[in-house]
Image: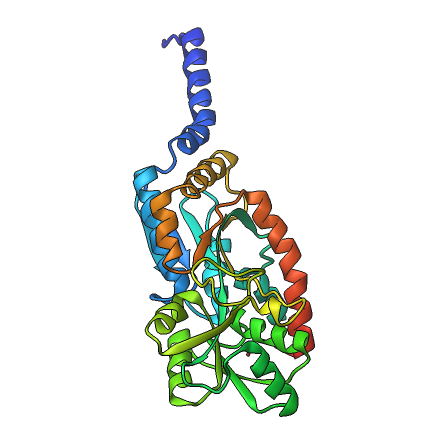
Length: 326
């Protein structure tokens, strides 16, 4: 006959249950205990990829685990975002994307997810100016000159961007609507191709971020007529904000980090705190400044509020301009 020590068995069972209950919390406290995937929903070499690698490297230094860049380009960023939405909310996957996060619902009839409800907002990372640029020898010396000619000769001025539905495309559409002018959009497969088209004379103007245009301007090959931010930026103190010539025109372009819906609160708090510490890091700010970017490193609530504000704005712009993803 076998006798069972019931009190000892009960103690062992209770201990096992407590360990099982505590293990998720312990795992969260230990986060990250393995490499973290940082999805970039655009091709390597672009502005978001550049910023993503900078941020990923600093998070590796602070958290002790690699942040592995996973470029998932295509469909205006929706492919990489969808991969993030479908990933487990265990702290192993994040996405660093642009204000396309707020634009995609405006241009896709069936996006398949809502960025406001199907992702966990983590942080606004940076504001980066969109520039309105021409060749250095172009006849347009100012944004006012461009607007004046567009009014005198509707439908004759062309502007290039990195693609249909991109933040640059909608920035151009918003300018046309605000200034009440008719501009012709010419999409390219990326900002580099748009810049090449500018130099060959295929287009008159290009809308692109400072990451793509600053070096061209400093080398004297391009002239930046304006930035689309609410005010002038430190990297280009002599370049006016477009708002100075076109009242009411601001086309924000920002980068942000999000995670799959349901990210545990301890992990969210940890990564938010580490990102916030970068906001006052002098070296990090200096590296951002070379890109014409301003570090934001906000709270999750601020990113959520920004999405709530920008999604309806871009819906209106896209609807008025008839912009839909192909």
